[in-house]
Image (cartoon, rainbow, N blue to C red):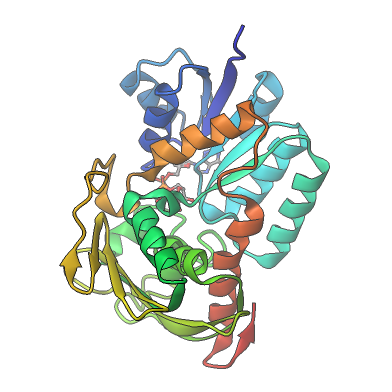
Length: 334
Ligand SMILES: NC(=O)c1ccc[n+]([C@@H]2O[C@H](COP(=O)([O-])OP(=O)(O)OC[C@H]3O[C@@H](n4cnc5c(N)ncnc54)[C@H](O)[C@@H]3O)[C@@H](O)[C@H]2O)c1
């Protein structure tokens, strides 16, 4: 008989529906528990998705009470490391929202916990699996790879976004601003196309919410990779226009690939591919990859394969942005 995976989710906020919808699509997964420190939020998700799950307001109580095979962590950033370690210590597999954690010290502790555990850890960089990302990768490979890239994030986050959340906008709980929260996907994709980063030179600023947040709302910089290639980036949440992320890739044969959400352009011509149909759950900027990546994570558990996004590969985007925070326009090792 096929094994059924008993699964729990902690953090029943904004992104939780993307996880629950993806889980409900996998026949050998059973959502047995939901946890949120605000019990009502967990109850609300339980009703919304017609689940039979037990409800908890304390994570460790849930881990110790349920026979879990896997837990999804979608809590504020400062809780990611401790919750992941607690699950791995109990040999419970973890599907972890980005960022993996908020410091290099935490990263090291998580890597140690992963080594000691028989359980696996997958980090939610779902945009690596967006059809646009995959198609651009294929085009890049035809041309012998990417020579150079520019990643940009032009978003807007207002005062309310921070004041109502309780954890955003503070180094202690969010770990940073636009870079660790919004631009981390774009930085991860720069590594996905260009390789292992070596150093970064960057500047950070808080332009539009000076008395509201202590973290950056803008950051620009240059990443150097160990293969000698470079990438530039600019990210802001102070652009009061339509949300946009843009990846501009120049191939070794000088073709110019531009990715904007689900669309890909090569030398200005839109690529017409049936897979490039947006089918978003939640906001367009999340991409449509949660469902795909979560399915791949359970497939990897079932077939004892490598995780689709390992902590080892996810560490680089985090290391880049943590180095960018320290850089103050000086070359900083990652
Ligand atoms: N992959 C993506 O594209 C993507 C998109 C959005 C959010 N995220 C990530 O998902 C995570 C959650 O983001 P969100 O926007 O849903 O935040 P949110 O604030 O809407 O939800 C967080 C939830 O965690 C709960 N929580 C806080 N402390 C807790 C504790 N100690 N125990 C149990 N529950 C607790 C809160 O009550 C809240 O319901 C963050 O890491 C964020 O960066 C990822």
